[in-house]
Each structure stands twice: as C-alpha cells, then as structure tokens.
Length: 282
Image (tube, rainbow, N blue to C red):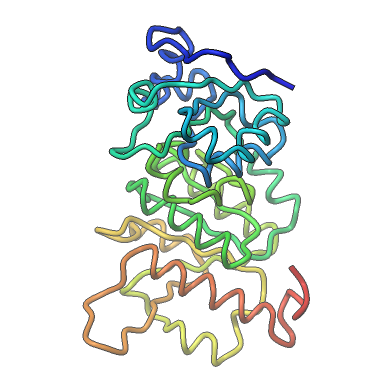
C-alpha cells in the first residue's frame, strides 16, 4: 500500500511538473499517462486495476473523499497532499474539485475488440470535439455497448475535456484508438457486424428500420463530425446511412443526442424477441 505524503507537496516538485505537462497531448503520448480530475473519475480509476498511478488531493478533499483516497492507496497509487494552488496548477478545469489523478493509458487493441465478437459498437469517425467524444462514450456505456472505436481522424481520447465528458465511462468499456476508418469498417464487417452511418441526410429512417425489424443484429454505428457530418467516402463504406427522424421543428440534433437515440434504438431491438441479446442478457 503506497503511503500518503505526510506534508504538502511542493509546487516545485518534479512530480507536480510532470503531472502539469500531461495537459498537453505530446506529453501524454510520450508518457502514456493522462489526467483524471474530480471524485467520479478518480473513483473509477482507482477501481480499474493498476490504472491510477498517482493522486494529488487537497487536505479538504482528502477528508471529504476519504473513501476515494483509501481506494487509491489500496490500488497502489502514491497519494500526495497538495495545496489548492498546486491542484489549480495541475488541473485543466476552471473550478477544480480538489482531486487530480495520473492514470495509465487504457485503450484496447482493435483486434481484441473484434475477437470478443461485439454486438453493439460506437465508431467515432472524424469526431474532433473532445466534449462530444466523451459524451458519446458515456452514451455508449449507458446503452450497454460492447466497445467504442476512435478512428485516426478523431480527437485524442485522453484530452482532459473528453475524459471529463465521459464522467467515468472511459473506465467501463473497451476503447480502441487511432484505427483507420477503412480498417475499422472492414474488421467489424468481417466480425459479422452491420455498419450503419448516422447522418441527418440519410436515405433510411431510424423509425422505419425499427419497424422493419432490421436492428436486432450486431450493429456498429458510425458517427461523424457535428458540423459537417460524415464524408461521402466514409458513408459509402457502410451498409446503410440512417437519419434520426425530426418530428418537430428543430433543425437537427447535436451529435451526442443523435448518438444516444441511435445506440438506445439498437440496444432495445437487440433485447427484443429475436434480437442478438436475450431480454435478461447484459
């Protein structure tokens, strides 16, 4: 069990400097470490094997979240008591919550995801906004997806905004990163997964697909950039381009909302009679 530092760590400590540098992508990639901020993310990291390496906590946060600090110690992480100024220096948020964890990368090789025969997958192709990426990951987790795939044209999974937006879901399901979109589509198709592109200009309607009973099999939803959608060449790689129907006067749905609708539609169809998941299955 790693000890808690008996004194406040110095702002000039090399450990503080190293943690601060993880706010930049090139340092994250070099060290294969990222930051998890706030009690929810740190709690999930502490419960995820040896993912949590270090934890910086204010005295107040260490007392308020004693269970999380204890879990971090039990996980083998080194816990440092820090001043609010140190936490603010490390944190990438405007109002830090007093806990910042340093975590090991935890992405899963794409081939391992395929070998597990996934039944519901979210593929983020050309998704550049980290908040959107993290929120779609959270939606996929909530809908019971088996995996998330980020293509090489998408945002860094470990961007602090993406980590925060996932609200801990980053630690719940396998995520592959940096997969070329052609490889992602080909691999999933070979694994028996139907590829559906989500696009507001799709020629197929999600409600119609549900009514026709075509949504019960293994499915991967391909999501694109919120501003300009999916490139034509990416849509052409999929089996169908599906739009979420707009029944009211709204011009469109944002990416995360559309992703939630699509993923839950598949999850419900898969759990219905004849779907690829039993009603009681996970």
